Amino acid sequence: MIVDCKAAQALRHAESWEEAVALAATPLIELGYAKIEYIQGIIDNTLEYGPYYLIAPGIALPHARPEQGAIRNGVAFTTLSQPVNFDHDECDLIWLLICVSATDAEQHIKTIQTIASLLDNSALITQIQQARSDDELYRLVDSAIVGI
Image (cartoon, rainbow, N blue to C red; front, side):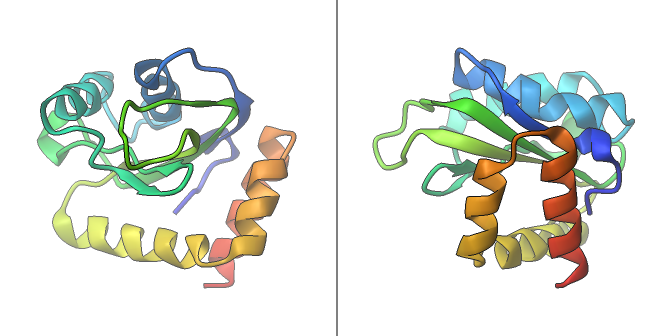
């Protein structure tokens, strides 16, 4: 799922939800999983439908439709040094963004199932929140996925 250490970003800073989304999607673009327009796809969808990808307190799963720039299936994990407001009454400030690029519905569902398994582990979520480096974040996520 997260196949490259460059897809893990710990303690990044964003001033707005738009900046947080762009930051979270950047590894997918740099690694060839999505086109640059994927970021705008997520932002446009959020403006039209609201932050549909807020999945748990403090956690967002930003993604867009495959035709909005997905090239390959991929996932990037980003933690924020300061949580960001996504302007949604029912959700806390977001500190973890798990950006997903999926080229088809079947792969999207498999990826979501894997992420859901990770999120069920409250000790892992605490460790992810406390990760101080990209490498530490990558190792936590990578080892947790191997155990699923």
